[in-house]
Length: 330
Ligand code: GLY
Image (cartoon, rainbow, N blue to C red):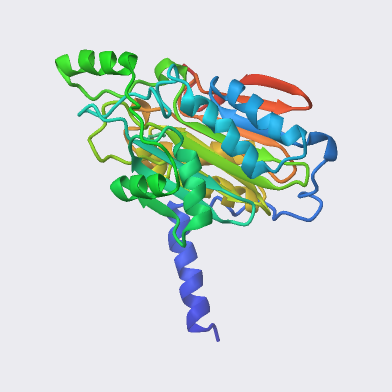
């Protein structure tokens, strides 16, 4: 006789099968061989958008001298954080609708430890504060005033992050005050970075000033572990860029890593995570989202909604900007 548990499982599967195509159904599980890193492929670092090129350079300096992936990603993303011309990350980032630059960042290491700051003001390197949260507190995330207080206690310096350039743009925006996120605005957005060091260990970092002219207090995907960034050193890692709300609603980078755990390569996993947005969220065409992923074998994948997303890959002594494939073709 069929047991009650088996019956419930079988009938649920039939019912669900009618409406939801299981994404894990046709994929094989990872074997030990799948996870063998080819030594000539590492170290490596990848990061989102064209500001990833100088960020990768800084990360590479750490990796090529035998440094670890956590130090590499922290050093790497600090380049756009400090660059006033990168107006979507750190110092010089576009402010919120009230004229405040508020920053989100997170970092994750090979052991599954992570640290994050959200809605942080006045600190040029939120990624370094996120690392301190990971290493110096029992918590994962600190936010707002508490995050600032913690940063100051840790010796970070309070600075004005609103540059004249960003202030001028905000004043022009205030004339009409319309919140209209632009797809691929200025060809950059969040910097998300993933690295594999000589030992084969993976770490990642993600940092942003978030959506320009957002509501004061808005937090995006970038400091949310599993949305903006996720690492599982047994499997791989993923980062997200673009409109954070879509990534948060689908827990995008956790999904990408889980898809890889179940046998997809990074490209297939990024594509499936974009497909999840496209099938679940009606307004997807209004926004850009891009995913970037690596697996334990140092394979790379990326996929986005609209054409225009690119990423920088530093491997075998070459730092190259690569266009991502997209769901919409024009
Ligand atoms: N992906 C950055 C943000 O939406 O804040």
